[in-house]
Image (cartoon, rainbow, N blue to C red):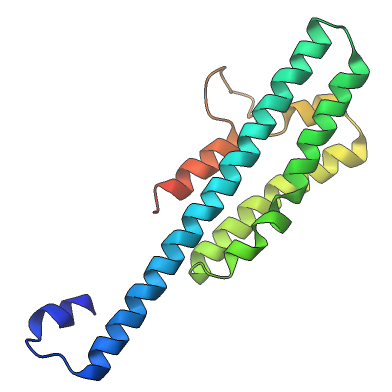
Length: 151
């Protein structure tokens, strides 16, 4: 539709209005996507900090209760992702909306299972595939990167 603008030396008022509305909608979607990605980055960073603190208290302080508390908080963050992201989803294109909602729901379902089982081991392994190597992106970070590539 922007192509139509380029080929029309005197676009009609209706075409101008339509193109302006489409540009505003595109801009709104991009802003929403950036806000969603920012939210997910914040959550991913919080998770990394919780994991780091959990490892520290377990290995240096030998405090399994604080270790468990840190991992519970991690799992709760993951379980809450769909709800926190909900306000952003309505402004995304339907296909992307479904992809994001499905991905966040997957993280939340796994976290909910870990919380129900009350398993620190399971909570610690959330987001990490069997072939994970230190320094790689975890699954949430990979998900964020895939969203960033679409902006």
